[in-house]
Length: 472
Length: 84
Image (cartoon, rainbow over all chains, first blue to last red; front, side, top):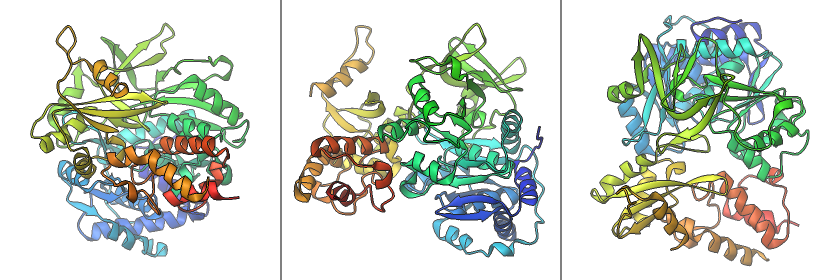
């Protein structure tokens, strides 16, 4: 059992104990704990020297060594980090920075500067003492009322998650962890801080290496795998998930999307020695809060894998079909958006609960099963997407014309289609949307309709709209 | 299929998706990265390669192909299927 209230202490303890072991492996090069510790100290000192200790700091989160040192440096300087997607778009960055009320941002040029800091220059580790409820990071997710929502997660939230993972798993300093997730994705926080808490090596794919994830894992001798199910499906389609191709993997975690049994079977064959765990959790509950350890002897052929039971110290209940969560991992709320915080987090008889918007059921063994969404939210390659955010982005471009964006499953992937009442200039609109939405949120097509069909009950007939895609 | 025919096939296959992004079909060429540009997502890219395998009757080792810089560009795909 490892107990801490500040995750950065776990990294520092590992850095002291395993100083010469590799902490980071990226682009064929390794960085030791000592180097990463010194590098991040230098960044922390620079932040403090400029008067930004304890600040919320944004940076462009490229998959490069400087980004990892920056995250540690910001935390060491008592601040919280706000990673911005390297793919932009810039207008979305602006919305995030505006919402988070950031006073500092580290642009690409500054990251380059930080990269040039001599790792040996770190020496002095004097810095502010952080408090458990100090914020650790702010991560943005899609928002249904237009614009992204920033979830504020504290150091104690993250510490609660880490304490659970380090208690129930026997991670070792000899382990080699994948770092498949973008740094803007909260599952990346698991990669970094679970790995660095035990002195293991974090292996980061760059460029196209993520698409050839199995080959990357073989080359890097990966022992701990963590990915969205979509990545497994991608590997399957690439014919890469052959029998026993991942003999070194001893732990595999899946999260971010519904996991199906056929996908588990394929991975179980590829990694015959791995313990398999399905994790569930929204960003608002810090990475994951419910887990299901898969028993290889009791796998079924079809259907969805249960999401399991809450971590110790956490709680879950199903209220009118909706899954609600509680416990020390519950985030502080949404930055700069108290109304949204009040809608999603509520206190019931002195206990704070987060309403997930997910439909679930609890079986007679107290195992939770995910059943889908109560609203229109979908997951695209693990990213939460509110189709209404696409409509909100279109609204100012269309002068208030009626639009509706609908998801459709095609070949195992979810695609978005936007229907607009009246004539539209699709290329112009798509160009405009690219300025405000990330590529995974762009609709496949924007379709003009002369009327919005309604059902016998007077509601929008979504099926009739989607049927138009197949019938011109 | 020679390189010219492959080029033609790819453009025809991608014309709707290019239009979606406001790209002219002639811009779908050369070093345009089909994934990074948002033209295709990674699953869409692999599906495209699978389709090309069927059309050309050639099977490619995708994992190895991705070792090559620029594998997801328009020219990268042509190289992949032109390679002996």
